[in-house]
Amino acid sequence: MAQERALLVTARGADKLRRALASAGFLNADCAASAGEARRIAAQDSWPLVVINAPLPDETGLELAMELTATTLSAVVLLVRTELMSMVYTPATEAGVLVVGKPVIPQILQQSVQLAAATHSRLVTLKHENEQLHRKLDEIRLVDRAKCLLIEHRHLSEAEAHRAIEKQAMDQRLPRARVAQLILDRYEL
Image 1 (spheres, rainbow, N blue to C red):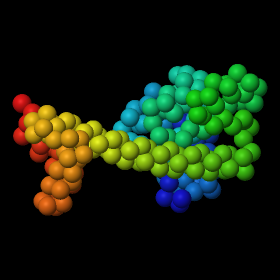
Image 2 (image 1 turned 45 degrees about the horizontal axis):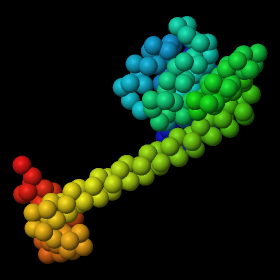
Image 3 (image 1 turned 180 degrees about the horizontal axis):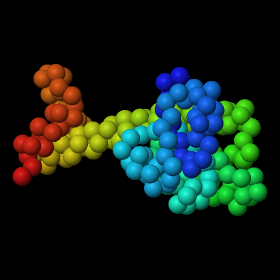
């Protein structure tokens, strides 16, 4: 994890938080001084970890944290004063934000950051699996549309249409999706 990157959003105490992130393996930490600046930076690049030291000069920080968890794969840690924890905790955790009370104990921050990093890693894995499933589903839909055209135009049964696509894919050494697309191109207007 020594090459991990983090976005640190804080109006004060950036050096101390940077050192704490470095001890957790996040040696490359960029800093934003406001929520607006953080939004601009986050829109330009993806960040495995975002640490928000609330409050920020232009907002509380909770809005930014919830927005980032909703729109990115970033793991978000929100640092808030202990007396505000009861107000922030429920909406933040329901949005997927990890909340840590201030003053921050370095070991707690390090554990929280490592937990957030593990969460980010799992999110990336799930996103990849989801994309693979969507590609497979798209391929199945494409092949089904091609089978329907074969049934309609060549008067084949569904099993015969399926076998025709499989045979053509094997004979021409093409993926089934490519054969299905060729059939669609041939029969669709």
